[in-house]
Image (cartoon, rainbow, N blue to C red; front, side):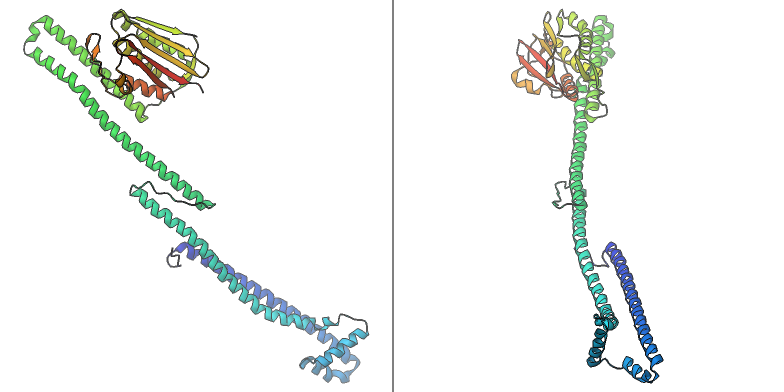
Length: 420
């Protein structure tokens, strides 16, 4: 990736700061070296003046000789003589006499070397930083490219980065974001399809009762109202169709809200035995009309489960009502509530018309109508929504429903809640 200074302002800003730091550092080093050189020269001069002054004070005739000795080029012969003189008086480290000159020469040479090293160090730092930034900008380029792909709707992009550090973490989070966006878009698409199907299903399901009501009204307007018995029969049928439409709409609204998350299940620790007992009692009237025996069996009056009483109660009620509707007059519906070590089981068993084996996997599908069309010795007019709603509610409670059935022998629906 091209990271020339005129292309990437961020890199340009960092290089400017780095260059400023190096220039400041270079100036400081040179000031220090000049200061040391000045101090060393000053001390050497002071030593020379001290020696020259002392000798002249004692031997004025040596003035010209001393001046020449301090200003002329160094001679190894004289250096050796001077060294021997110092050794004669017990000063063995005679090399210190020339130490100041050596230090001054070293400082002067070192000044150029240090400046050169600083420049080389700056170049090396620049190359290193450029290499690091090249890798960083390459990662950013990949992120930008893949972000554009996601915007275009391609969520299969994956950034592989096995290194450690913040860039790797960013790449990982980018991949997670891509997956989440894909799930979100899919969920929105599914919800859109769901609403589309729901509207289509509602339209289809309401078509029949609306057509019946329209026909009844037309017959009444045509003068059928004069025949009282016929008029009453039409009105009674109209009430049935209106009730059916109301129940259908309410059920569809409930299942739609549950599946789209508009309504949440409010689960609390509550006595499940009481919930089941209330639903069984609420349906005793429906069973008595058909002279059926609705019985409840439970091992304990206190079986606690974290659940939403209203919603789970509706799921249980729909299944029991389904058994009542598809069981002939004088039949039996038995409800069993059992608590085991690892699960809680609610069983609703009847001796009704039963379900064809090939229909069992489909009975929870919304609006599905099975092969067994008889209901109470009459043509069935069910909507196929009750069991679908029950399944959604039970799954929201982390449970599931099992079904066993034989045609003309009855059915058994079992709701199972695993214990945590």
